[in-house]
View 1 (spheres, rainbow over the protein chains, first blue to last red):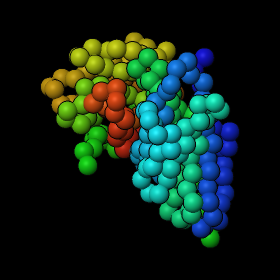
View 2: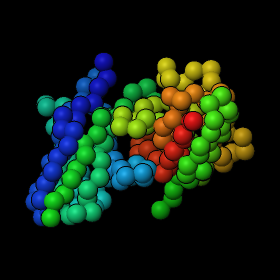
View 3: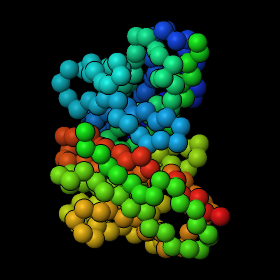
View 4: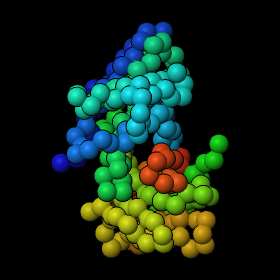
Length: 112
Length: 113
């Protein structure tokens, strides 16, 4: 069955520290992979996407993610977190048929 | 940067009433979607629309729901008789084709009382 797992519900990091948010998926072929960010009460903003090619993709706001086929993972990273990065982060995979399937999200808290 | 626009941003309605949520997708996009997110839960797929017809729908998208692209620019989601459990954030999304990402709107928060 199609599934996307974000094992960490909450993560707290200190401002300036590095960040890695985990995402694992099950999919029959090479998927399209996405990371979205959602600030409280706001919409979903696309951080980055992977379709094919270089498995390390760069996104907006200094984020990057690496597709590892052998581990069925697409982890999101940032070398130095800023207080404004506090938000909820969603990994999404597709297309399953014609749609995206979202993970449950990881809430990032940044402490100063 | 082109945006998907959703109106209203927040709607409160009484149980049993009809609501229409409106979306203006990006103009050269061909695929249109509605998703919803109940508070504290995952973002869930509702329906996809392509070439003026529904291409896929989820189990959630029952006979109470309908979608329409009435004039080539707007994309609407209608809920005929709202229930308390329809309270959620509803996101519209569009994409140009399979090689492009999905662009989401900022959402409509629907509260059924």
